[in-house]
Length: 282
Image (tube, rainbow, N blue to C red):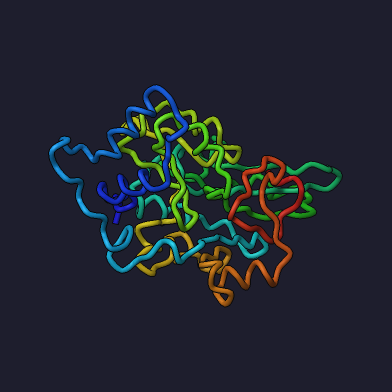
């Protein structure tokens, strides 16, 4: 499935109406909210009835609280997660657009700060032999490495998402089960959300003219499946589950480990929990 993460239009209208997104907004937002509340119906017609559940017939989003765990001590930097995400979600097959990516942190002997390899490094793109992907170049073959580890990154689906706060049309919104999504029908491509995200998790799709991001494969998890990146990880470095279930894999991950989140000082309250990272990981 490549395009199922866009929410059903009638349910989207109901969601925006019920949670009152844009109620405090002005200008274009007020006009957009008025249109959503009416559902595009003329004054003489009755709005369609709400579906029994959302976003699928058997899914109740009020009964879940999703969260993600990353064990950096297990990640081997194979990038299968990155490739699976691109295939599953129709992300551009180039080395510049990612819903999830992996960084490498390397501490060399005598250096206090790590050297950070990212997906944006031209050397890593060159190592892949194609402009469509990246691989971690073997640049430290002859260096004295004291410590090295990989850090998977993705949208943190924050409890208090800055991206939602700055969106002028309500296109960026938070669902009842804690997932932050983008309704591309209402995204105007202003990129305010891209700038507001402190984690660099959003990007602009120049072909579609809208913002993009990780959705935790919402079209999969609402059908009882795992996100694509979690499913393909060969070492179990990524875990996902429902925090409302105390016995879920992610609940146990958070309870049994000394977890931390990225940039807690921002007040976004991320819902991606890490094990095995140090203070240099931002």
